[in-house]
Length: 341
Image 1: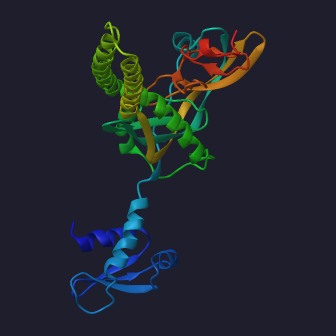
Image 2: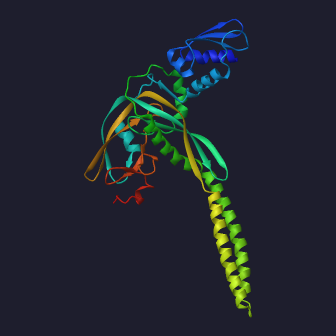
Image 3: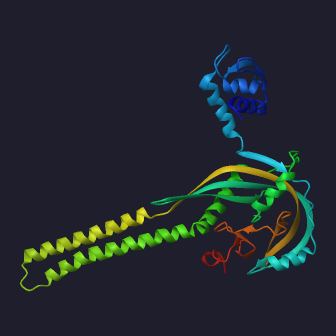
């Protein structure tokens, strides 16, 4: 596509009327919103290779760039063609849901129209080197459950997606992005296991070299101090050198640890909201005399139960413990919980 075709498409998608004229130019009728945003009049002419008319040059190009950059950051589609089917929901729960220190009771199920956010995050592991990858987190906006491994299967369903969106109240995206960021942070530690192992290997290698180097220096000083007939001023000088060696050693060790310290950066890239019908199982969780109702959808794309979220580390779980205040904890977080008995 040439530059004229690209600019024409961008403007038409933002509500402009664009008509090609002679001399490689287009005449543009701008809607009021774009007139204010681009600081242009109602009608303008854009010339691509000289000729008469108003040539906006780089100013209009820069403004169009801001219009394009905002596209693709958020989109929404509907998948009304999906037909949720559920057989024997109690058996599904029995085979998948485990409350380690409590019980659950199946209450009922129904088909609901739900909305999901598919959030792409750029996850960067930064140390003496840098590694980046994109992590996709899916979150059910109504139930705060996580459908795992939905991304690849969803691609095939999007071919039949509709732009006719249901009139449904959805969650605040900012809050969902924060939840997605927390889940991505947890998954990033698993994704970067090899990166972490490499850092630890290099750190241990450098620490070992420092131990050998400064250990040799300290050994030579101590050997000198143990010789017979060493003068007091030589002893004092040797002890001072030994203390300086120890100080320098600890500084170098600290520098090595700082150099290989890992920082995980998580930045949102874009978000897709997907509306789809799903079978929702209503369940009561119980620990002692405390009860808590939850809704767990059977995802219509994966045909698997969606995961609840550990309140400690934000890991998606279907096997969990309950705190005394009925918060969910994964097996790793539960032993460290002071409120758990």
